[in-house]
Image 1 (cartoon, rainbow, N blue to C red):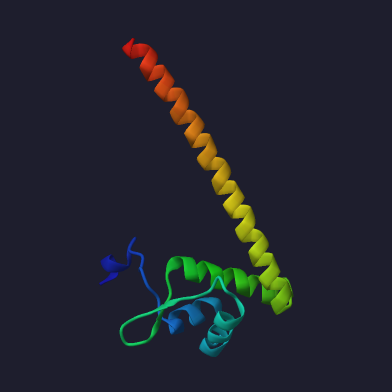
Image 2: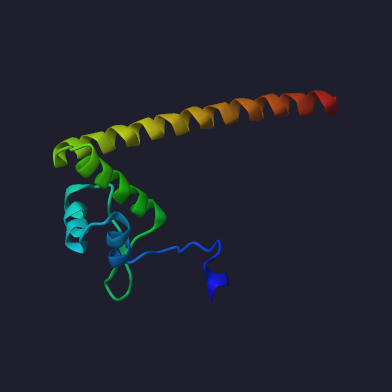
Length: 114
């Protein structure tokens, strides 16, 4: 049994498991779902919420903003949007760099072939 716990990560977590991880009540997580558009866990066939690793990360960020940094709901919502925008910009920049590297490598490959 102990061997199963080594290195195995779950794909989905229940609301109770996530609530326990962040030390909040399940009803608080359900409330946060109504206030933060970035938090939308899917529901399984039985209609129960299933949280992915990404959902859990969002819950931890929300909790940190609200409890540790003392943001209001509106302030936390704005901070999450700002973080999301910065991440998107960063990803676009990395993608552009990868395209440049690919173009360079393609040119080098074409020179070798000639």
